[in-house]
Length: 241
Image 1 (cartoon, rainbow, N blue to C red):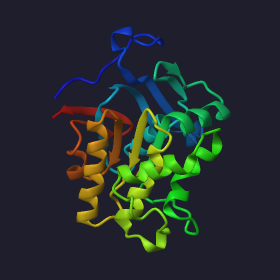
Image 2: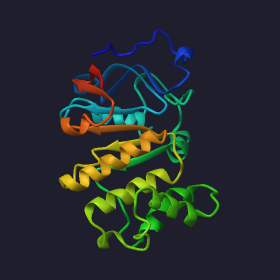
Image 3: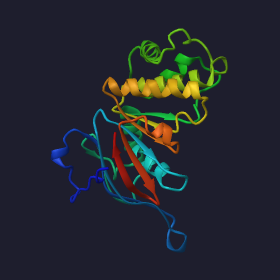
């Protein structure tokens, strides 16, 4: 077990030049006064480029709030968040949307696929928000990376749950993001499909992708090389495999 990394300033630590993610004393409070709920309580952590990290904790531990912060879906109440050397903690909603679209690929427990669209059409969706060239080719390449080159024209209803999640992973990949953020990606899958999805995430990491996996399942959390445990809004344990 190693200590959680801590930082004393609000400037990025140059000794961590390879860090993709750096959180310094991040707190998140919802509501105010007697109704205030402190979801995160001074979280400090750094995640390097190319790491595969899992964040585990029970319901109410703060892991979902931390995921929202990491994914630029929400901002800290206090503290700083540096992503790829850029302070995103004070960005506007418009700026955060740009970071999400350009630099973060999301994989959720619910696949969030549009039922009337083919697999490749679902995968190309993130590219519609930018001036990308040859979106279809990029979508087909992403589907090939997850082993679905023969299912590109199939709609979600024509695919198994595991195949739908692989389409979702391809959609996360198509923008060539800095970070793959996977929130309970095996939660709706059987054991065989879960193994397939985790193997894909591991393969993506081995090819150089940074992957952060949020889960409540200790068996899933043990797949990455580094495990962070959350309890009551704090990171309380770090295990390097």
